[in-house]
Length: 186
Ligand SMILES: Nc1nc2c(ncn2[C@@H]2O[C@H](COP(=O)(O)OP(=O)(O)O)[C@@H](O)[C@H]2O)c(=O)[nH]1
Ligand SMILES: Nc1ncnc2c1ncn2[C@@H]1O[C@H](COP(=O)(O)OP(=O)(O)O)[C@@H](O)[C@H]1O
Image 1 (cartoon, protein in one colour):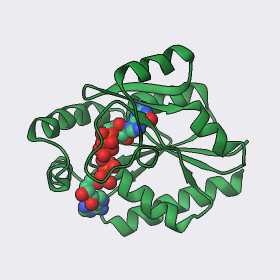
Image 2 (tube, helix red, strand yellow):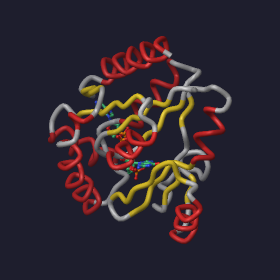
Image 3 (cartoon, helix red, strand yellow):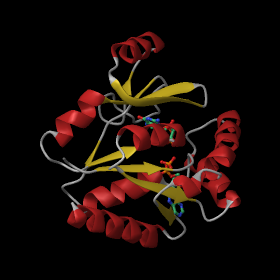
Image 4 (cartoon, helix red, strand yellow):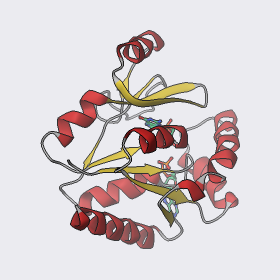
């Protein structure tokens, strides 16, 4: 069975940035493209960054049992499509899921062999600065995401690995070491 790596942690902590760097260092890793009902941000492409679905389309896939996991986050829905995951694992590729904490918990139940990594911000101030600095979310959405982050941070001890994303280069190296160790272990 191909390995599955779950990267979780609060919005703005740097999951996407870390994963981009990780994928360039470990070329066999593949990223599962999630489905969401949130609107595309400028520059985001359907099928590349997300599968952008309407509420109705998302609900229909829930009813069909098409999701491995799904969750509501900040008023929108997000989920991992079984078809996305399976087309990659069937070919033997190790797969990365970038998901929030409720989804990561579901994966822990249904795929206990998945490797779980929680990305921790160096401080709450740094998390705020990153979310604001990214410039993709309205001030209201930033506050909503920081509110969710407070809850998510209390869950970090549940996860097998924790990586503090302070200096990007150090965090990428740590993540790469975890992935290499787990791939060696099979
Ligand atoms: N449960 C779950 N969460 C997801 C999925 N895809 C993305 N997310 C998470 O949903 C949250 C919001 O995602 P997004 O709006 O893209 O914001 P960003 O990740 O902070 O850029 C983040 O914590 C994502 O990691 C998914 O398929 N399932
Ligand atoms: N180690 C780091 N130090 C400083 N800024 C960072 C670091 N990692 C990520 N960032 C910045 O923080 C912002 C949020 O990162 P992003 O990868 O979008 O987070 P997430 O995917 O967890 O929401 C981006 O502007 C990114 O460039």
